[in-house]
Image (cartoon, rainbow, N blue to C red; front, side, top):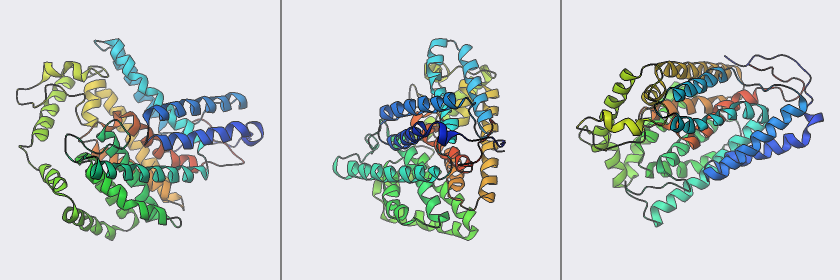
Length: 399
């Protein structure tokens, strides 16, 4: 499902050339700062959105977006409904300010049209390489080498850092596998990206990256999937002891973090049972956690349930979960259609890998609720649709 289009005169270059170039510069700055500073990313995103709105007002036209924005907007509406019925409306409505990030989709669809989308990919990989290098320095020189203190780059949390590295790896591998040119730089930075992700000890991101890379190999040539076990085996052999111990703990039912995840599954199921339609409300899970906490749970409280579908159902209700599944399904189908239709498959492959990585890692971490992760994810899944837009004679009609 893609955005419907119709031919209209595109006056962008004649009417707003300055605003258009400024919006593009702000977009590049925004995607670059995402892996460096959430504060800088927020400022640049706000400026980009203002510039985008100014373009629309100047040209007297409505915004347009890929058709997957319809379920995305419906998910946002369901979030607001859940907030209204929350036991603490102020807390839930305040947390719902994250819905502003959904405007990234129509803005990127407008600004990153044509060849700009590929340039955005270049920026993401380049900044990701620098971020990975800094994480390796933290591990080797600053003693960020244990579960209590892990590499986090310049970001506030190692989970956010590992999630962004996972998406950058999806981007770089897609360029390597499907790119017809400019593959030297992704090949050079790939070792740093893989090492930095390994050092975060974030198992959910490891799983997401492996599943995404496996998908890319299968899309290129099913036989390439046989390389993935070899790559993992090499990593296990050369990796430090902490990496191996963390990897094997994934299969240990007595591991405290694993036990706590079982408890969170039970807590989430009870919340859904008591609040099936609208959930307990955004950001209300930690407040009600102790009320539903079983005796065998390890932590007294957790900020979320470490599982995307479960968190959505508990916070926003089963209808919101259904809408989210609609979003993922429609997005995946549209991306596969673009992948099969487009000659240059890098952008569509990157977006498909990002979706699969998010889903796989999201079974063990609420990455869809992480602002930095969500921003980069929305950029990546929108770029293929933006690139497919005509850059000259026509402009898409709203979806």
